[in-house]
Amino acid sequence: MEIYDVVKKLIGEREMEIYDVVKKLIGEIDPVGETNLDEKRFDNLRAMAALIGRLLSDMDDVFYQNKDRQEYSMKRASVFVNKFFDEIGIEKIAVYERCVEVKENENDD
Image 1: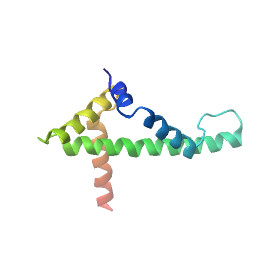
Image 2 (image 1 turned 180 degrees about the vertical axis):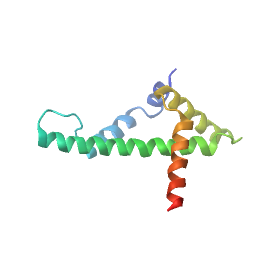
Image 3 (image 1 turned 45 degrees about the horizontal axis):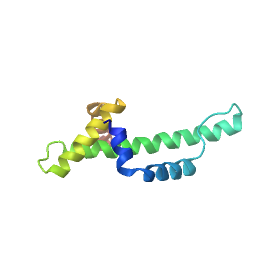
């Protein structure tokens, strides 16, 4: 069973409720070929990307904070994120290294 199937089974209709709320808050993202409308939709697309980036960063934090833990519940969370990232093609080390690089640059200021 793939991770998407597990997530869908676990949260079922709640997933659609969250998705619908986020879509409604952000707005349409598909361009339609009309300059003014497409400008707004591009802003919506950027907002969606920013949200997804923050959510993935939160998940990345769960992975790194718990990957070496011995407690079952903490290790399970890390394993779940690891499998999820693998399935969607995200390399955890690359994400982690970028985050560390950004934090180091912030400390240099």
